[in-house]
Each structure stands twice: as structure tokens, then as C-alpha cells.
Image 1 (cartoon, rainbow, N blue to C red):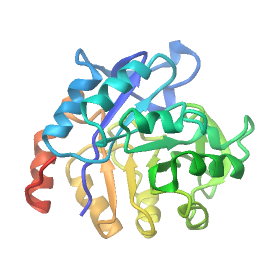
Image 2 (image 1 turned 90 degrees about the vertical axis):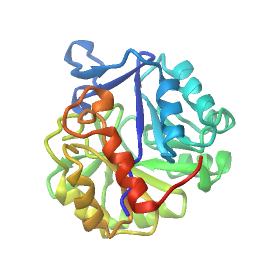
Image 3 (image 1 turned 180 degrees about the vertical axis):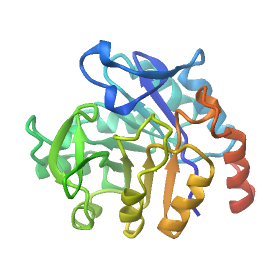
Image 4 (image 1 turned 120 degrees about the vertical axis):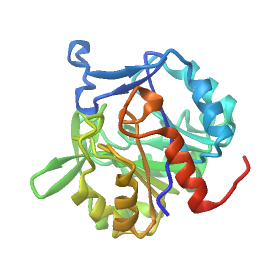
Length: 261
């Protein structure tokens, strides 16, 4: 069954929902859908109450470490963390309460060349069982390329079954944002979901464009229930009007039965 994985996106220390493609170095280009009056810990406590395991805390740039630590402290072992993770600090975030660390940019050099040794260093630091590889991507001719640096720089790595096979032994899960539709609430990238849904060697979470609870059912059908999904800007929890948080929690409980934290 496709489960709902909750999120806490942090920008300048606050919980926000941002249109993914606008997250550049130029602050004037930033398009923000929602800025919460509540802190990151409030959301973590809510997810803990509703037994939503495997959510991710994403630090979008500097100034977010304190808020991320507060969220992890509110639910030790219940959340993953990403943003600025490197081999030198990965274990520190596990010790702070993260179940996994999520990495993208540190796996590439400035030109987008994949660095196999960096991946080995991360595995040495925390173990593959604590590592989530973020292969968030943008469309290119013939498919999708992994994007780094706030999804602005395309790398040499293409999102294919061969790439997933190569990386699978080095991680516990994959997280994949469809950056071109992230934050737009215009529907999922069905071609990407279909590609990802046919590959089932590791748990995987999809993000990007979800605009209705029916999108979860479609992802479930395309992946045979093997792929989870997260939703941000469309969710009423983040000011959206298309998907109700309570409905997602109820859907999960109906399918999975009662759980305890």
C-alpha cells in the first residue's frame, strides 16, 4: 500500500512550502506557497501522534539546523533529515534523533559528476541502513536527470533502472522529487511514477505535484503498493485546499489497521 510520508520543509528556520524550481540563489525569484506560524517541533509532534513513520525534514539552505534538531527531538527515530548532509556530519544527525540522513549534492562535484567515493564515505559514516539517496530530478531529453544545489544544477546521473540498481546496495531508501512539478499542485508526473513504480528493490518515496487524495491511489496502482508518497502545498496542513491531512491519516489507518508510536 502507498503510505503517506509527511514532510517538514525548512527555509530560514521556518516551516514553508516553496515552488521547487524557484529555489535559486536569487531571493527575488523565490515563490513561496505557505509560511507556517508554527514551529517544526509542532509538526513532528503531530506526526508522532498520528503514527506517520518515515517523514522527512528538509533543510533548504542555511539557518535551519536548530529547527531541524527541535523536530528530531520531538520524535526521535521517527523522522529522516536532509539538506547539507556530508560524511563529516552524517553521524551527528543520527545521534540527534534522525532515523536516516538524506543526501544529494554531496555526491557530486560542482560540475555534477557523480562521486562514488563520497557515497562510500557516507556508508562508512552511518551505514547503508541509515542512508536515503535523494534522486530528485528534472526532465531532460529522453528522461530525467538528478538535480542538485536546490534543484538548479543538473548532474550526469540519469534516473533509470540501471542507476537505481547501481545505488541500491548503498542505501536503505530513495526519495525522489519531481522538481518540475514540485509545489505546483498540478498533478503527479505519471511517466516518472510509472518508471519508478516498476522498480521495487528498495523502499521509495515520491514527491511532486500531488493535488488530490486520488493521486495516492494512482501511485499505489502504478507501483503495486511499493512506493510511498508525500504531499506539501496541496495539503490543508500547509495552507492548501486540495488534500485534507485528516483524510490521509484516516486512509492509512483504514488500510493498515491501528498502530502505536
